[in-house]
Length: 449
Ligand code: GLU
Ligand code: MG
Image 1 (cartoon, protein in one colour):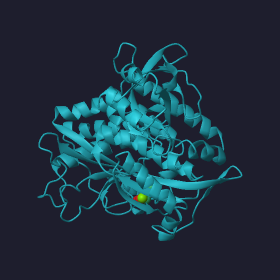
Image 2 (cartoon, rainbow, N blue to C red; image 1 turned 60 degrees about the vertical axis):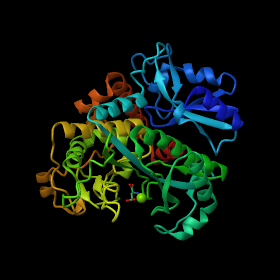
Image 3 (cartoon, rainbow, N blue to C red; image 1 turned 45 degrees about the vertical axis):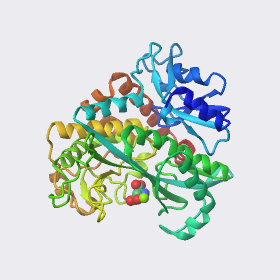
Image 4 (cartoon, rainbow, N blue to C red; image 1 turned 90 degrees about the horizontal axis):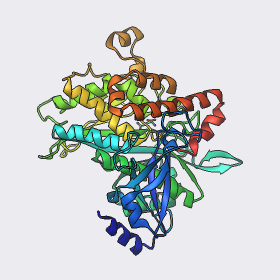
C-alpha cells in the first residue's frame, strides 16, 4: 500500500491519530502517534525516537548500553501494508514500524528487520515459514488493586464462554475488522483464562499480527471495564498463559508444505525433521527469546503442559515441540509443529526470527532429531532422561538468558547490537524481579503483557 492510500483510508475512517507501534527488547508494546496533519510525510520519513528506548526494560529502567544513551535518534518508519483502523480506540489507526537510522538503513537494533533478514535467508533456499500464534489470556477485574479472575469455570466451560460473551463477540468483530483471521476460541483451564487461535501467515505478517492481536485482546477488554493479561503466569496458583507458535516450511514458488511427506509414517518430511532438530539443538537459548520474562519460568514447569524438558513428541502436550496429528482430508495443509515453550511476553519478531535461525541450522547441518518422546517426560526415570538428552529447559529467566548468551548461532543471527541490548534489558528485569516478592512480580507482568 502507498502512503497516500493510507491517508485516504485514514480520512475515510475519520482518524485523528495513527499509532506508530513497535515492540521493544522488553517485549512490551509502545507507540508514538502521528496526527492526521503531517501523516503522509511521517509515513515516508518516520517519527523520531531516542536511541535509548531499546535499552529500556519492562520497568522503564534505562540500562547502560553502548550507543543507547540520551544522545542520538532513530526513526520509526511504518510499513504501510500493516495499516489498520483500530476498532477499540476511537478515531485511531495503527501501523507497525521498523527502526531506521538517520541515513535510512535498518537500525542494527531493529527486531522487525532481524526477522526480515531471517526470512531472506529462508528465501535464498526458496522457503518461507508459515506461522500461527495461539494466545491464552486471563480476564480479570481490578478489586482494591488486586486482579480478580472473572470466572472460576471449568476447562472449555460454556458457562465461562457465555459469561464472557459480550467481550468475545466484540473481540471477534474487532479481529475481523482488522483482517485478522480468527480460527478458534474456547475458555481454558485456568480461572478467567480464555484462548484464541488466529490463522497462519508468512513469518513477518504473523509477527505483526501477533502484536495487533495482543493489543486487541487488551483494548477490547478495557472497553468492557476488564483487564486482559497475556502474562505467562497471571496468578501464582493458576494455569499459565502460553503463546504457542505453530510453524511449517513452505516452498516459496510452488507453494506446497515442505514439512509434509505422505510416505512418512508420521507424515513428517526430512526437512521437517531437520528443522525440528535445529530447534531442539538451540532450544535452551531460544527460550531466552520465546519465553523471555521473569514470569515465564513460573509457567514453564513440569506437568503444566507448557513443555519443560528438551524433547519433541507426537500429540504430546508436555513436549515443548509438539507435532500435532493432521486432520483427515487436509493432511498436507495441517502438517506443522508447535513450539509450546513460548509466551506473549516475547517480542514476536525475535521469537520467530530465533525460531528460523535455529531451524535453518538444522537444515544446513542436516540434523536428525532424537527419538520422539511419547509420554510425559517428567515420568521418565532421571537416569534414562540423562542418557537420552531429555534435559530440563532453563528453570529461570537468568538461566535462559545464560543459555542465549552461550548460543553463538543465535547471537550471530541477532548481531551484536541487538544481542547486547536485548541481554542487558532482560538481565536487568531478572535483577529487579528476583529482588522483589510475588506480588511485585505479578503486578509487574499482569498489566504490561
Ligand atoms: N496453558 C498451557 C501453557 O501454559 C497450555 C495448555 C494447552 O495445551 O493448551 O502453555
Ligand atoms: Mg490452550
